[in-house]
Amino acid sequence: MVYTPTTWQDNVTVVIPSRITNIENELVLLDGLTPRIPPAAVAYGTSLPASPVDGQEAILVDSTTNSTYQWRFRYNAGSTSAYKWEYVGGTAVYMTPPAFSPPAGSLQTDTSAGGTFTTPRAGTYIVQAFAAITAASGASGQYMAAYAPNFNTERMGQVSSATAEMSLAHVDGITVPVNTAIQQAFFCQTIAITFSHRRTLITPMRVS
Image (tube, rainbow, N blue to C red; front, side, top):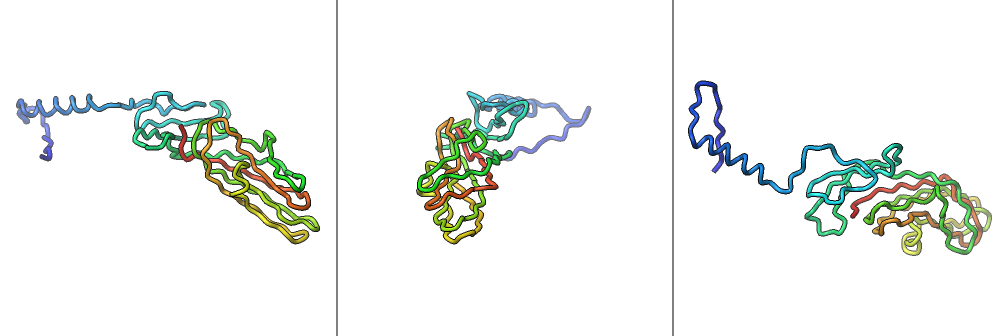
């Protein structure tokens, strides 16, 4: 039955047991809701709460004094995934690694500090990689991948004419453990060339 609220007026509304009982029952119901999220500020730090409750939100950063990213998560206790902190918004990791000139004939990974991001939590991430290339005379088969271990199945590129210019973009969804290094990978089939104007953007989907 839908409850019809009473409009209370001083010295007019009659206080009867049934009305008081309704108020008491509602207080008991509210007090019994578990788990309860206190009206406190959203957690902000370099780690997520260790004992979260359903619906709790927290902001993960790499530094509390000079962060390079801010990721807001909501904990979904009902998720069937092992990664129950679900990303709801924030800034992507944005890296601008220097130009990279891999030798021809073998897969090369940029392991420089400026080209490496280490995952702070296990989970699923979206990685976007960008670069510009200009093929030298006789060059063919220039490739790039956003995440080195997936190079053989996820690479993008192909330049076969001399002095050809091309912009490469590659997006990859990866599920990785904590402390995984995310780095761009490259392959030059015949002649070494330079991959310039490189960018990497990383955004989480859900984490542990």
